[in-house]
Length: 182
Image 1: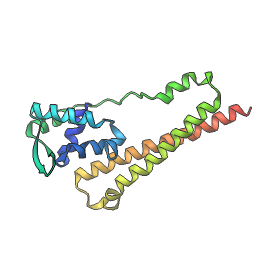
Image 2 (image 1 turned 30 degrees about the horizontal axis):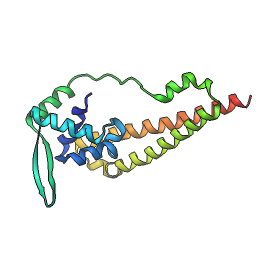
Image 3 (image 1 turned 90 degrees about the horizontal axis):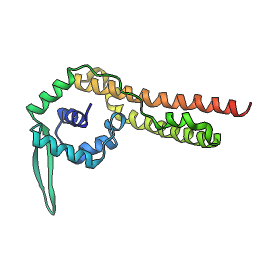
Image 4 (image 1 turned 60 degrees about the vertical axis):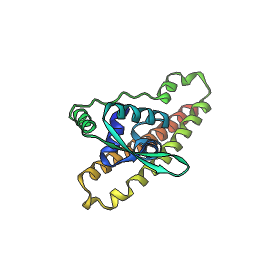
C-alpha cells in the first residue's frame, strides 16, 4: 500500500482540504493504520493532482492563501479500484520494541520495564481515541450504509490491535517481574 492509496481512499468518501487529510492521519482513522506527516500529505496531493488522480477547488480566504478542497477524479478512482481488486499481503511487523527485546538483556530490567509500561499507556490511550472514532458507527450499526459499515469494521480492527498491545504489555511485565524475583 502506498500513501497515495490511503489519500485516494479518504477522498473517495468525501472531498477534503489538505489540512483535513493530514488531520485524518494525525488524529483520525489514519492514525491507526498509516502514519504520514503533513509535509508528506501535501507533497502526495501535489503529485496526485499533477497525475490527474485528484482535482481541487480553490476557496478564497481573506488575508490567507486559498483553501484547496481536493476531490478524487475518475482516473483516481480507477487507480484506487485497480489497487482494491488486487490481493493484499499481511504487513511485516516492524517494531522497535521487538528489536529491543533481542538486546534487552544488556540493560537493567528497569529500563525494559519502563519502556513497556510507557508503551502500555500509549496503547491504552489509543484504545480510547479509536473508540471515540467508532462511537457514531457503533451507535447506528443497523442503519449504516455499506461504506460506513466497512469503516466501522476497520476501526474495530484498530481497537483490537491496540487492545492486543495492552494485553501483551501486561504479559511481558508479569513475566519480567517473575524472572527478576526468582
